[in-house]
Every structure is written in C-alpha cells, then in structure tokens.
Amino acid sequence: MNAHPETTRHAAAESDYGPAQQDGLAMRDVTMLLGDGDDTVRALDGVHLTVAAGEFAAIVGPSGSGKSSLLAVAGGLAVPDSGTVTIAGRPMTAASRRARTALRRDLVGFVFQSGNLLPALTALDQLRLLTRFASAGAVHRDPMELLTEVGMAGKADRRPHELSGGERQ
Ligand SMILES: Nc1ncnc2c1ncn2[C@@H]1O[C@H](COP(=O)(O)OP(=O)(O)OP(=O)(O)O)[C@@H](O)[C@H]1O
Ligand SMILES: [Mg+2]
Image (tube, rainbow, N blue to C red; front, side, top):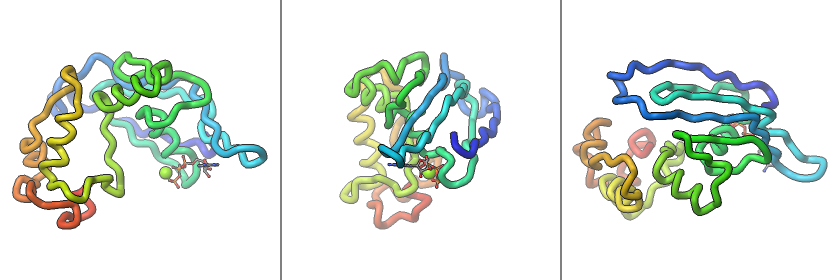
C-alpha cells in the first residue's frame, strides 16, 4: 500500500468471543490497481495478511493509504488484480462472481458507516431478512437475541430514521 497502513492485532480470548472457527483470513501477494492511464494508483501493492479465527485486527493508516481497498478485497466485495484471498479456507479470488456473492453472504459481515439499511423495514426485520437470504449451512443467530446483545431490544420496531447513527451501525 502507498503509505503503509499498519495492522494492530489483538488476540481474542476464545471464551470471550465464542469457539474459534477452522480458519481465518489469508491474503497473499495482493495487488490492486485503481483508475486508468496516467492516473493509475497502486492501491494495494503485494499485501500479505493473515488474521486467525477469533483474532481482531485494526487497519490503521493515513487517508488514501488503501484501507478501504484492503477491506473491500478482504471481504470479497472487490477482486484484486493479482494475488489470492482465502476466507475460512474458501478461495474468494478463484470464485465466480456468483460464488463470491454466496461466500460473502455466508462468511462476511460488513458494518457500513452509512448504515446501508432498507428504510421501510424495522430493525428486527432488517435482521430477519438476512436470515432468509442465508444458505442452510450459514451460522444462524436469532435476530432478537442479536438486538438484545447490543442493547436494542426495546428498539426492535424502529425504522432506520428513528435510530441514531451508532444504532444503525
Ligand atoms: N476509482 C479510483 N481511481 C483512481 N484512484 C482511486 C480510485 N479510488 C481510490 N483511489 C485511490 O486509491 C488509494 C487508496 O484509496 P482508499 O479508498 O483505499 O484509501 P483509504 O485508506 O480508505 O483512505 P480514507 O482514510 O480516506 O478512507 C487512494 O490514493 C485513492 O486516491
Ligand atoms: Mg477509506
């Protein structure tokens, strides 16, 4: 990456965050070019990153250093120009667009700053919708239980415009 963002690691105690899964995230020699012609930017330049299951990693770096590009590639939203990305042993980069979408649906969670919620649905229904989309093998969590975990049990019937920015996240 241009300005070398740093990765801060924190190994989570297994008991705090549930049982560790088989595998984590592995990025190998990942390169991504953005823009075209003279404006081409090497947003990612030979990135190697391993994040074990149960490990927390924070990507830190100056504006424009490639953090969003890294997260987009790590989560299978974007495809790198070269290199490989594996999540839980599943090759994100080798997969077709359709297969990648299914892997992303089942293996990746994004918290978008802007919320990216459906305006007409209540907080509970947003989560129920995800449950309906998930494949049979996906990890299932009860939507009401998830809301309770983040202290929002009393706001299950609220629509996005009735929630704070943090509550939407
Ligand atoms: N579509 C594009 N065409 C050309 N260059 C781009 C494009 N999108 C992003 N870039 C450049 O790629 C680099 C990485 O951008 P990225 O969005 O990953 O940075 P970032 O670390 O997330 O920055 P910020 O902290 O501001 O969110 C930047 O130098 C940016 O200007
Ligand atoms: Mg960014």
